[in-house]
Image (cartoon, rainbow, N blue to C red; front, side):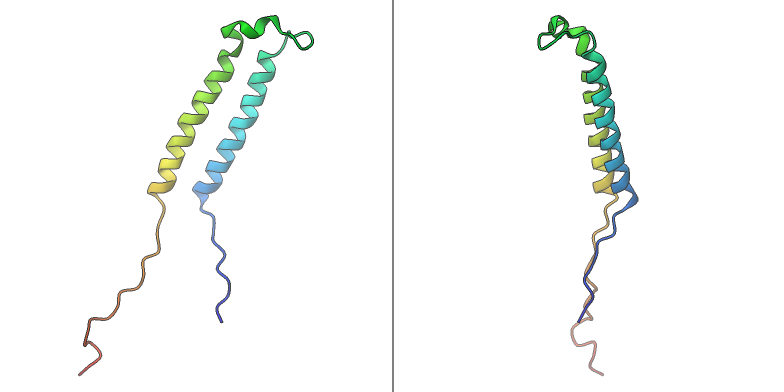
Length: 93
C-alpha cells in the first residue's frame, strides 16, 4: 500500500498567490481613494473618469502581472515522465 501523494506547491505558486492578494489589497485601497468625497448613495464624482483612473491602472497592472506570472509558472512546470521501459528482449541472455 502506497502512502497518499501530497503535491508540493512550488515557490512560484506562492509568489503568484501573494501577487494576487497584494493586487486585491491595492485595488481596494485605490477604490477607497476614488470614493472619497462621496456623500451618501449618490456620488457626483462617479461620472468623472479621472476619479477611477487609479483603479483602472491597478487592474491593468494586475492583469499584466498575472499573465506574466502564469506564463512563467507554466514554463517552469515539470511534468513527471514515466520511467523508460527496458527494450524488448533485454531480459533474455
